[in-house]
Amino acid sequence: MTDASAGSPAASDTTSVSVALGTHNGARYLAAQLESVLAQTYPVREIVVSDDASSDDTVALAERLVAEHRSAGRHIELVVMRNAPALGVTANFEQALRATSGDLVALSDQDDVWRVDRVERAVRAFAARPQLQLVASNARLVDERGDELPASLFETLGITAGVLARISAGGAPAELLKRNLFTGATMMLRRTLVQRAVPFPASWVHDEWLAIVASLTGGVGVVDEPLIDYRQHGANQIGVTELGLGGKLGRLRAPRTERNMRLLARARDLATRLPGLIPDDAWALRQAAEKLAHESARSALPPGRLGRVAPVMRELRTGRYSAFGRGAQDVLRDLVQPV
Image (cartoon, rainbow, N blue to C red; front, top):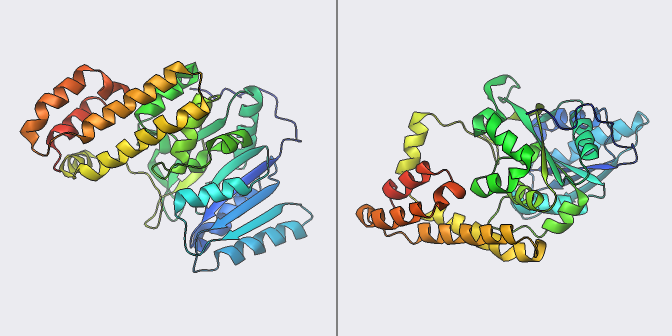
């Protein structure tokens, strides 16, 4: 899939861009990240740092780097919030997003590095398609030293050309009802999406919730290029993993109860919130109700594996395993996973 904004004019430089940066003990990598933000070809007007109870000098480092940027004659606003105790990833990003003031807001993790035109490419995508609420991109996966890993973010997540084509054709809601596809560190969104999506349900991760709401209220755009280096290391609060055969078999041996309860809570929160967001979208409301019915059926499966066979087969005949998940993979999990 090619970037829909390719060749389109850049947005007016009156479009203001904020950055919502969530930090937690991030001093080790923060300098490289902030320097990449401050070096953007399309300038960022504001950085909001929401620090989740860091015990290192993360905040002081951010303040010093922005002060140095200002001393070079370049204006940028810095807003710093300090949490004690920590709020957790989703609530911390919600706090940062609420505090931004730009027309567009880029999400930022403390340990990544942006390509110099990351903001410009996203702004151009919004300018080309004004109805879009969110633009995400691919990313180059790197290790803690910044060395490139074998697969890109999209390759690791199984986001194929077919998936991207369906999203480009307006199929993002159906794809996102199956699973999350986009990573917050690659996202830029309109202020209207922030206002519509808050408060974030506790059962959802912030980027997953923003993506599903955006897909249903204006649309999601994708730049199929790696616009950031997404660093993978042992201290990631949220990272990505490409599963080999051993990892896939490990999933089948993992207990199912907690995961299925979490999926049920997410489906319930989605079905509860959507009528207030899109009261006239009959398709979306029906899909949310069907997804809730699907996760309710999965959560109600009996503990014994033999006892699950008949209800799993009944649920399979409804078509909801494919509509709201990974089809045969989820069928197999429901049949064999321990409680």
